[in-house]
Image 1 (cartoon, rainbow, N blue to C red):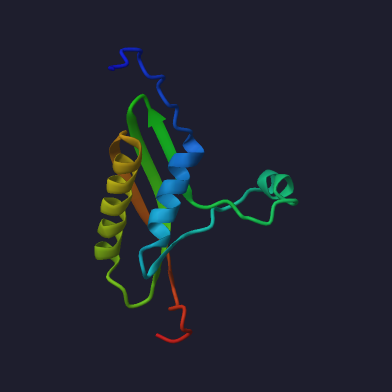
Image 2 (cartoon, helix red, strand yellow):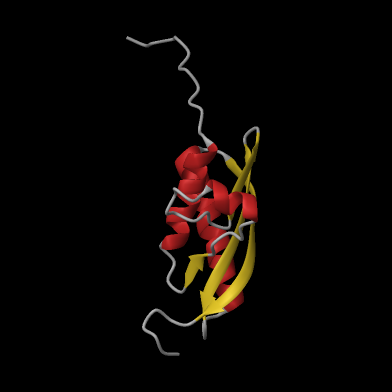
Length: 120
């Protein structure tokens, strides 16, 4: 028997979108989401919170999403290749998991870091 009652629309919070982007980026070897720079007010507000904010911002306008992310990339890696991979992966995962359209994934390389192994 068919159910003709309309299904309620599920609201997707910005936190969920941010978590999807963060988890996607954590899966790419050679990059990490940078820590956000903090001003004095943010430092005082976050004293009880051990997790420092990340340089990752999701903006939603209706059914369209824009992601702005600051990345640290390991020394010796292909900057443009990893930035493009990050853009593609975030866009695909957000669209696949939410059904929303990703308008843009803006990547800024903020720092070049030493590889996790400790040598270049």
